[in-house]
Image (cartoon, rainbow, N blue to C red; front, side, top):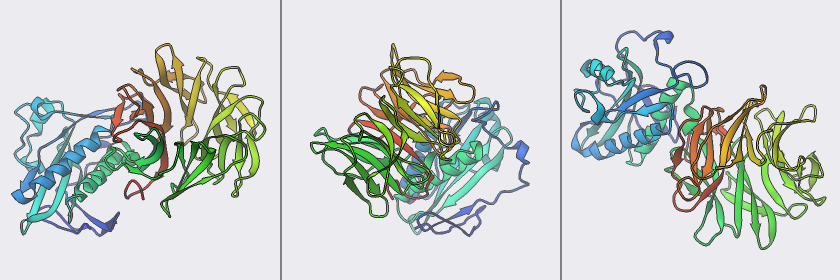
Length: 456
């Protein structure tokens, strides 16, 4: 549990944080800058799209806390590595060396940081009390103005809470700079391969430190998808007993396998209206159907002679993208659920699969096969414009939009075996998300941002 602490510039703030934690803000000397003066990274528009960040070495008020404080700083740097619009500067590249005279604005020579082309500076200080860790505090400064962007401090009772403090500061800082703090809060479900060849469903969060397996089932469990509120995950399970629908419930932390109409169950999802939709074959060929609570058919979303798979909904539930072979090759289509009109999305290439639609229903990402392997592409539904986001090596597949529609997670074997990678709608350099041993595939990013651990 966190508790308040204060020293010097610190003051108490009665705001309760997650897992019974409490936080205080740093008192800020001088007037706050006007909103127009604040550093802002415009990840969606034509403004500044990136910033150079330097995280200074820890200042420690006592050696007993240095280890935990250094861990907190390390976790923070690791978290911010996954913000593609922040380029971390190595201390060896700084004019005058990596050390600072202090952690407060009055102690910092901002001019030499400006000469080093640093835009954002983060300082950290750890304090001890009775030879034990009393807390860690982070300050982020706009180097150009010398003003503090954000300052928060955390009291840590247990060493492992260093990770939690780093995550919370990362959320608040990225939200402050770019309006996208949910990068670190929403969970990602994926399928991970076991040594015996079976696959189970796991959950994690950026930056991948807290991977948790949530199923232990025979056969292959794959293609997980969150419910809109994040309380359930549906998935496909294939074993000697055939195809079944899997459902994991957060409240019970248990997974059940259910029989379905037909013999196949491909890429199940939960629509915004709470209904489970999946590609099933009760008529012989795969159609996209709704399932009733007792796992009977309750209606068809897409019914065609062709193979129709991979449904995905926008946040409103008014649009659904899917893949169909109705033109001979797999292509991506979008269904307007208000009018039942179906519109073709992909016109280039002969093998386009695994679509994901942005929460606002404006963009679609998918995997398209090229002469150099599978790559991730993005289409604007209004203009029809198409752009390639990834360029290999290897195969890039199975993209999934994050909560705010800017970040995208996908699976790739560019490093030899399939792992999860993070990019953006602007095609930022992909960054691998650590998921432990075993191949990681079919990711789905929950659009519900939560405050606590990866698996709860």
